[in-house]
Length: 119
Length: 142
Image (cartoon, rainbow over all chains, first blue to last red; front, side, top):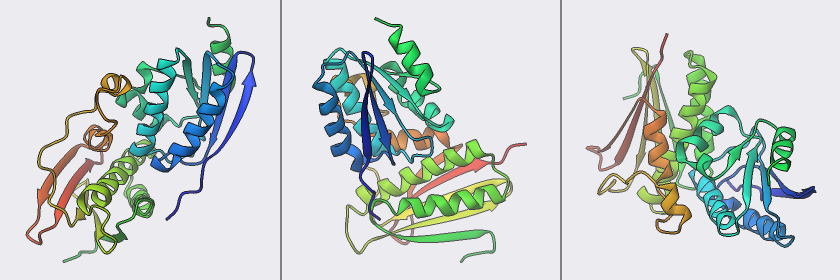
């Protein structure tokens, strides 16, 4: 069973770059996520918001890809927000420790407001 | 020997087919009364067990299979995932995200970690049929 490539829209909201990630997040997402992050990085943003689909299937391969992106954002001193997660994946992201490096917001609007208010 | 409380799924050993297993599992678990949040815990745990079976147990062998058996008895859902490998030499240590972020550890070990955190019980075993088995259990509460 092949996974369809992720479609990732990149939007600028003030000083925040939003990566709107469509589709499931697995090891197969690595090229599209890295490519989107590299495109976003070109404008040297200090804040990046990752938005997932609430119905997305996320597995350990996808978590590993995401953590590698978080490692890059840490090296580049970027603040990371995450939104669009189901309650289950909020719990999973907290269990694996992603919340030590990224803040989870209940909605895109909440994330943009809160992140815009931070330095 | 299968009984009328047991469902078996026989999957190709290819990443992606774990979704067939978790679709069947979700329908089964809902039908016996598990809540939506517990069904999500089951789906993640069984998906990870299947992925480990495909990647590490069967090591990508194209003709190997992954067998998933699901049963509900005595208020307990039991799921076994079988592969044709030798099993774990040692339990993987829990992933340390801080070391992974600093590139000191590889980003691995999340599957077993999540299975152990989300299920009531997880066991790893060799069977008499020379298969490796991961047994998981979740009690229906209330």
